[in-house]
Amino acid sequence: MLEVVDPGLLMTLQDTGRPGYADLGIPPSGACDAWGLGVANVLADAPPDGVAIEVTLGGGELLVAETCAVSLAGADLGAERDDGSPLRPDAVHRLAAGSRIRFGGPARGARAYLGLAGGIVAAKVLGSAATHVQGGLGGLDGRALRAGDRLVPVRRGDLAMAGRAWPSAIAPHPAAAEGPIRFVPGPDLGSLPAGALEELVAAAWRVAGACDRMGIRLEGRRLPAGTEIVSHPLVPGAIQLPADGQPLLIMVDGPTVGGYPVIGVVPRAELPRLGQLRPGDGVRFAPQGAEEARATWHEQRAGFARAAEALHADAVWHRLADGAGG
Amino acid sequence: MTDPGGRLAAVRIERVGDAALLAVVGDAIDADLNAWVHRAADDVRRGRAGAAALGAPVPGYASLLVPFDPETCSEDAARALLEATLRRTADSPPRAAGQPIEIPVRYGGADGPDLADVAERTGLAQAEVVAAHAGTVYRVFLVGFVPGFPYLGILPEQLALPRRATPRLRVPAGSVAIAGRQTGIYPSATPGGWHLIGRTDAPIWDPRRDPPALLAPGDRVRFVPA
Image (spheres, chains in turn purple, orange):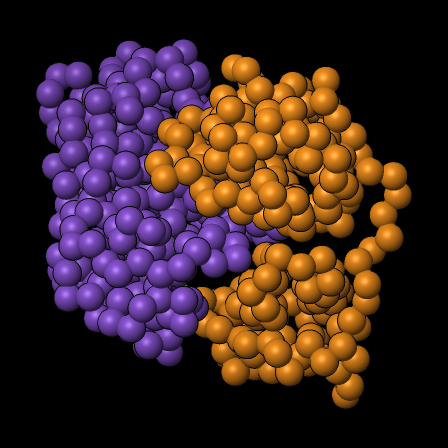
């Protein structure tokens, strides 16, 4: 069991989100980096849609109220014990009651995921425990975590997974990829001046300070803006082009409809990379066909499944070895 | 199969990323067009009861977004299924709603900081802006942007203004605002680029209520100066 001492910039409870309610204006929410969440859950023996803490950019502190196993995945936010020993990402750590976890600051990425044995206990609202602060949904009372909040593992006292590490060699984080972020062009190319797509691809972009769970504003060359359109539905990953010619990436808590033309949409396999962008990061884009994007997603899921299986087989082997030794 | 309203001939199906399609039926804020979109959404929802190849549909003003799961349904199959569904969607008039839902509004002052500016830019007196805004019965075209935000139309042409050049970082909950031929109510504090002309205490969004949103597509709304 953990207790929040200081949530830092932002800590929320997230799972895989609540798709299917956009017609009420409710965005899917859930982890900005679904890959990081998935790794934290697998490491913690939680179900794939289990609940973990999403830690944003660091600066926060947690007190271990009861000895527990804590999985860490996603960004490297400089997590360490209060004795200064590092808590490495993509691994499970056994933490003794009374010790503390501190997040120094981002060494790599923007969002870390912290899981507990079997997941974290949280009530579901509309099928998900994901926190959506704007709508007051999910998490603890529909709000971000604050000092004094207690996070309880689904399986209290289960420490069996301590010491596990994610086999990154089998399935590295998508954000480890170099190169441009892929997007599938459309659907509003008809509302944009000719050449807008080529200019988006040719330009170098920088993540602006306005970068949160709703959206990421990019700065760079001013693109020729299109006309405002009659508002149509949006999905996370949509690249909007407002009148100021600076692209806006829609994130998981973002608006469900919008009136700026959408020049392209970042496909599912690339979304974890967006979740790990932080202000100042450089971004480039490259167009990708939908069929290729789906093939990449399929391979990515297969890689994840292989890594999870390897981890599981390893855990079984260790249990057998421990049993033989005892 | 027939196409009763001839709508299908005008529908364009666009790709949205690698796992959604967008059926675009027009580019106007139009009650008949929007009613067709909501009927099409209902038909997709009914279709999902049998085979959930298509995801939950999301209506826009004149478009319908439909997610699909490429692991179980190819894009071509999703496209064919959507087209077949739209072909069955009858071209019906807007749903005959009951009495308009009345929303009390405090216009101007600190509650509507842009009222004076709107009056100046439209060449109307503030009282005339209020009379025109409150003198129209609106239809909920869609709910979106943030949870429970109703997009209402059609705003009288004399009040139509483009969005503010620079959006506000924080619009207070309950703000009643206008932009283009639309009016809306901010259910919660959020950034926003519309012109704020008043404020209501009506509970537009309450996550503890079922349904949490006060207004649903097709509802009629009248603003009443408080």
